[in-house]
Image 1 (tube, rainbow, N blue to C red):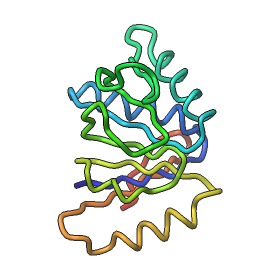
Image 2: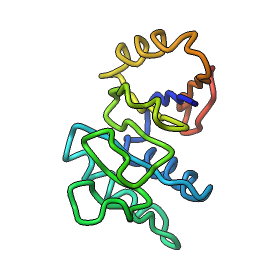
Image 3: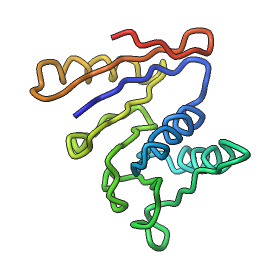
Image 4: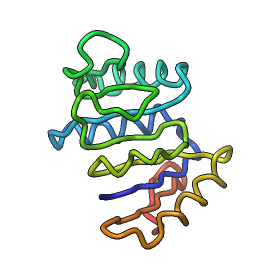
Length: 145
């Protein structure tokens, strides 16, 4: 399993979700985006539909009909009804269910920085886990660890 920590600075979470989602979908994988904030899920959905003029990123919410058909499923719960192999925690809150996915992305900003640091430490030494940390510097994403 891989766990990626993405520290947001310039770009909002919904824009970063769209960037990661494009890569996941290009690889032929499915994605679950989790947030406890319904308004944030609405922003993520809009960003996914508007991500690229030549190719939108189809998505739907878990509480709408046929969630299993969605390549990108938006949910308040960490349940991959669409058989997603990747999960993004857009609200900065790690969920224990992350170990059910091949790759997890934790997006966090200043408000959730301390929680992200505690989570990073708690995952230290977990067998079979590869952690990465990315930070945005002047708009460019840099792998720090």
